[in-house]
Length: 189
Image (cartoon, rainbow, N blue to C red; front, top):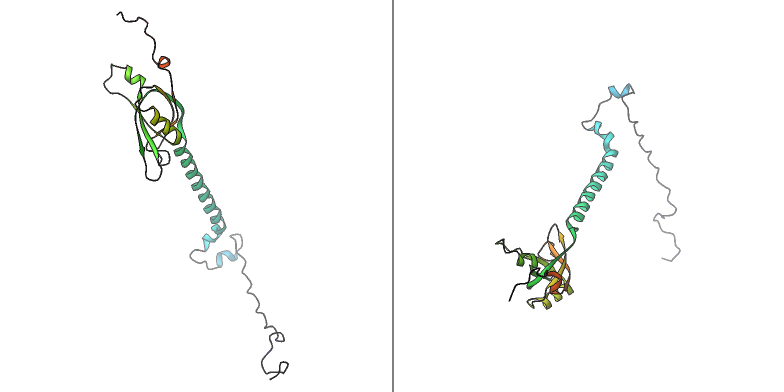
C-alpha cells in the first residue's frame, strides 16, 4: 500500500454532518392570571419553583450574615477591654510557660496591697508577658526595686498572649520616692 492509495475507510473530513435534532420547545410558565394555569396539573413541588432564584440570594445573605457575626466575635474576643492601665509594686515571681507559644507568667506585689493593713486578702497582680518585657521582668524579680507595669486586660486568655487575661506591655523601674508618700509626721527617734 502506498501513501496516497485510496482505501475503503470513510474519511473524517468528507463525511456529512448528521442532522441536528430540533430542540424541544419550552412550555411557558403559566401565571395565576392565565386561565390555563388553573386547568394544568401541577407537580408536588411546582409551586416552590418561583423561589428557586430567590433561594440563591437567601443562601448568599445567610453566608454573609454568618461571616459578619463570626468576624464581630473574633474582634470582640481579641481586642482588649482595658487598653491602658498601670500598677506599681515589686515583682514577686517570673515563670516561663508554654509548649508552642512561650510566655512569661509573673506576679506583682502591688504597692496598694502592701500598704493596706486593714484587709486580710492580698491582691497581687498576676499577668503574662512576651519577649523583651519578660526579660525585663526576670531582671527586676526579687531585687527590691519598685517597678511600674503597664498592661492591657483582655476578655479571654489566648495561647499566643499567655495564660492570663492581663498582658504586660511595658515594665520600667521607678524611684521608691515616687510611689511611697512622705510621712507628714516623721516618727521620733
